[in-house]
Amino acid sequence: MLVLSHQAFLHPPKPSSLPRIKPRASMSRSRSPSPLLDFPYLPPPHRELMLSLLSTVHSRLASHLLPSSVPSDVLSFHNDASTSFGALDIRSGAHDSPVDFILESWLHCKLPTGALNITTLFGFLNASTEAPHLLMEFIQGSPTSLVLFMDLLPRKDLVLHPEYLAEFYQDTQLEKLRQELNNLPYVQPYCSSSLYIRSVLSPTAVAVNINCGADGESSMEEVMGAQLSSVAKEVLQIWLDKCACSSHQMEESKRNVLIQRDNLIKTKTVEIDLSANLPRMFGPNVAEKIVGTIQKTFRI
Amino acid sequence: MLVLSHQAFLHPPKPSSLPRIKPRASMSRSRSPSPLLDFPYLPPPHRELMLSLLSTVHSRLASHLLPSSVPSDVLSFHNDASTSFGALDIRSGAHDSPVDFILESWLHCKLPTGALNITTLFGFLNASTEAPHLLMEFIQGSPTSLVLFMDLLPRKDLVLHPEYLAEFYQDTQLEKLRQELNNLPYVQPYCSSSLYIRSVLSPTAVAVNINCGADGESSMEEVMGAQLSSVAKEVLQIWLDKCACSSHQMEESKRNVLIQRDNLIKTKTVEIDLSANLPRMFGPNVAEKIVGTIQKTFRI
Image (cartoon, rainbow over the protein chains, first blue to last red):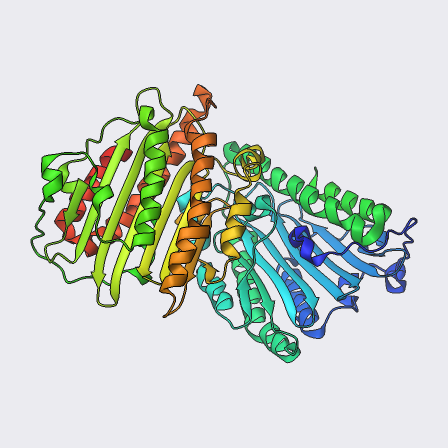
């Protein structure tokens, strides 16, 4: 949800004084399948890519993840005016897993200019490892335009730890993947408006704006279905292999700085991003529930 | 000299087996004025901008700087084939100054495709302060194209120290200056090929490629003389006011990490940039002298 800090995407909807939260029918019955797999608002290529990424995460990390304990009015929610819809699921890592939690969210917002769709996959590791976290975020402002953040978020100061930079960023060839996307037609570098978010990203972060122009719906479908999908899957694979499923252990004595740094990333992300923007999309009461659930998971 | 790591700028000149170093006439007589003020190879707008920046630094920091102790064959040098010329001056900070050193260099390289001109102004502070260093580098590959790096280099991990980010980057409005340049016509974001160099830069770093096209010599003169000059002067002013001349003191107990981080920046810069590229421009013997002088100043 990092990109919510980009004001360009958000026009405040009319405030709804008393947001009404109705669990969607499928959710009131059962927690399985997740409402994220049933979110009807996304353009098909965006939806297919996210489903594929989530499926890979779930099958590869099956033994790492505890069942979801997210309340049903957070698993699926909307604002009172039924112009904004969201689904959020969080799976905490099992006791002996390096996974702290996997956060998945889909947001849909009807705006005067069209529909805004934001999907997020956030893989946070715990202090048993120093390996990077995963961030994937796709912000589709129209059928022909998409802002995309994809990164392995460093957990150490890369200037002070060039060996960490070499291990997780140089040796993994992430730069090649970044360039592959950046060199495509329609693709421009994208800069977060938050200096803190920029600092959190790695030097191989994919941060781009894909704009296929007014008539480019089929071009967007092609880019998402081919190059974007392929790069996203490779980045995810690198994170799963080198980070989430690695046996790389962190020395107990060095965990304090790591935890302090991770906590700052969590706190600042919520502050810059969710606390500032969710109330505008869903009204204060719904937003408070969502942020509260995330803060509980973040333990901040 | 950070940008020397960008291979695109360098076509290795023919190796000269025995580089000949002849101090230029003006230098053999006297150290004043510096050969940097007399470097004849730069296109006029580039030269005027650098002279103006150096003049501001010298007059503002006059009482901070010791006389130059750079040997004359480093103050001014060229390769055996007289296709590459350089001038380097380094002024160390006085005992009670927060300035560690000011490094200024001008390089000129005749290439099959034209002339490459690189000017650098690097202001490094010592551990009495934690305020950022200054980097300014202009790499002009042709009269109509220029790559530009301008930054206040952070000396702390910005993720772990949001208060440092706020003090030196948010409150100083550096982002406004970055955007001012980035939004100009002919200007594109530029990405260093070195992941380490990218990590060293701040989130408000100006890193751009200005390309005015085949017929754009007058446009380049306009951009350099107006917006670029104005932004560069403002960035320099911020550094002089907030960093180099600030009374902000660093706690003695926290200096070790700062020194370790600064040393890594220096070591990696020399390794990635100078040691890798100067031999190709000036031959191994001249390059060794230049790198040796810089390493002595860097105390690495």
